[in-house]
Image (cartoon, rainbow, N blue to C red; front, side):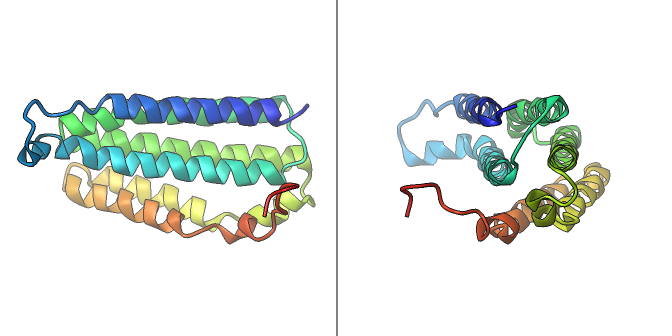
Length: 195
């Protein structure tokens, strides 16, 4: 089974998620810069979610570039990941419009489930490509992915104690992933005609 359709569909879903999120940000009524304070509570979660979706898109891209084949199990694992990513605009908007423990908890729950779904996808791809495949070697034990899920779980538990601390933990995980993932980056050969 060719992986091109899987990549194209996943790219489209993530692009739609980003579009939905920006459409949830309504401009202020007034025309002065002070009016931007009205959208600040919505803008912060938007930026964080944009970064998260960009991280998922980048890592998904790199992982599939290394994978040689996909099968039906991979397709379903990918749909599982996309399900959780499509909920990101909803929880982003909710948290931006009503910052409180329940919204921060739900935001973290969606992030945690997306992290788990990504891990399942990576392991399903390894099974499809073989335990001795280049993909399996590059993924390794995926310590960063496992640590992320643990941090999300702790942040979810802290949401009712301090939603701000929970959000700081979500930001910390995003910052951890902004560091380029060298497992794939330096090992993926450039496409023909690309410098």
